[in-house]
Length: 275
Length: 300
Ligand SMILES: Nc1ncnc2c1ncn2[C@@H]1O[C@H](COP(=O)(O)OP(=O)(O)O)[C@@H](O)[C@H]1O
Ligand SMILES: [Mg+2]
Image 1 (cartoon, rainbow over the protein chains, first blue to last red):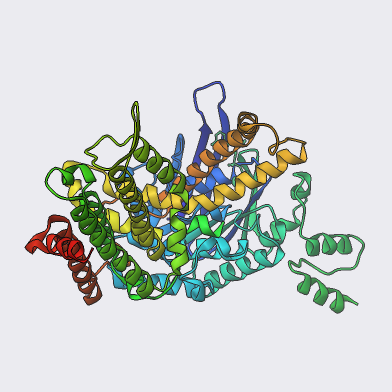
Image 2: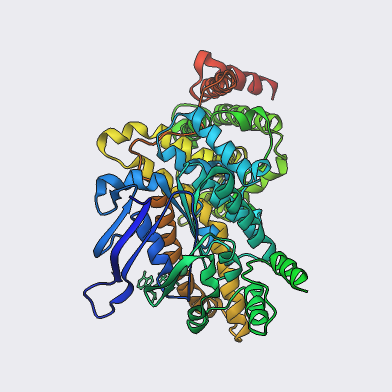
């Protein structure tokens, strides 16, 4: 049994009406505990829909979604499923409930019905994990986008989920903000063993993940380990490769063998070695 | 923008700020009741002298003003901020006062001018001054509450106070949550309105000229996108809340528990003392007002 299982899942918006949009079509995949997974694809390829299917915000019209073996279609399971899979959305402004940062982070654990002392501990822990502890008594609107998004991540962390889905959570951020978030997320994955699902169309981020699922027009077009980035079909789908991958690919083609590299540092090293 | 999002909260760590929001809300309500209890001149003149009225009501006002002044000083809020809170009602008050002076219809023994329904008298003038002071005090008290209490504390306090209504199925928790989310979203809405406004301006929309109707009409292209984006925002917020295990009030606990402390007791006692002294002047307990008035008459 995998941690998160999608079994032939389909979902349409406004199903049964003239405006029906088939957002997800017969999708199957599974994610194991502790994996760092990238879910990539063009706008409108169904990534956000998949994210919402993962913890029962949306329910599949056909097929099954299971988290820890619990079916999301069963209402009784939803609370437990949401305790183990949290989602950080794209726009940090639309995820905050409270006017004070620590109150906002407390929202999740408060919903779990924990006692005040434990909530406090979790809030402090979550804020420290994302490096925003000193700001706990401030109002969120004075923060930068990256800081706000870190608060949103803390809000999910405080629930202590097993998996965190980040739905294009870095797309509205500047390069520094993007880097901040990626650092926090990879650290959580490495040190705390948290399963992380990064939804992104920024391939540099996908290159940092262990596993890549590529969506196209509602279906899974490709999936596999990091080497998927060297699959020629990715280019055919019109996705832009990370700079280091595309350079390495061309070097390989022109006879200078640098192998498969995923970061600029690795690329530089490989080039030095082959010279 | 900062002002709006925090209401008019003035941050400080004073005793008044740290008092339990529930106690502050109850005190504010009692304060309003007290102001309502201050009599108008009609009720008084049937049995007493004009001087008795001035002394009784005047003394009451002085007690209340002293109370406000002390709270302001203890809370370290700049007194000017408290005074400024009456700015929004100043026209209403002046208007009411003028009407009250012109059309005073009660008992009047000192008439200055009388024609048709217009009747200017000493009693009318005193009555309208008393009314104006009453309205100003009515605004200043509660604004002291919002100056010293954050919106979150206020909504939490209201939620806690209204808890008994849950027995008759009033969705108290939901109402409080709606209030706090509304407060949270106000700065975002303003920011967004600004953005849309600039976008429309860039396309030569004109918001700043023409009469009020023209300007209101020019705002329409701002309101429609704002409304649509608010709906989208609300939708996303609902997903985010569901995703964070929100199930309504059921099984929900709070991180910050409101606990009554010694300062709340002192605050209450302080207010109760003021309340009692004010009532004493209003209702002439122990004949204090009459005695004071007699003293005043004998001096004149
Ligand atoms: N609330 C909705 N109502 C109707 N159609 C929607 C809604 N949300 C998304 N869609 C449509 O579903 C498809 C997949 O959207 P989405 O899952 O958001 O893709 P992605 O996150 O990859 O950009 C798109 O064609 C989009 O237009
Ligand atoms: Mg999306």
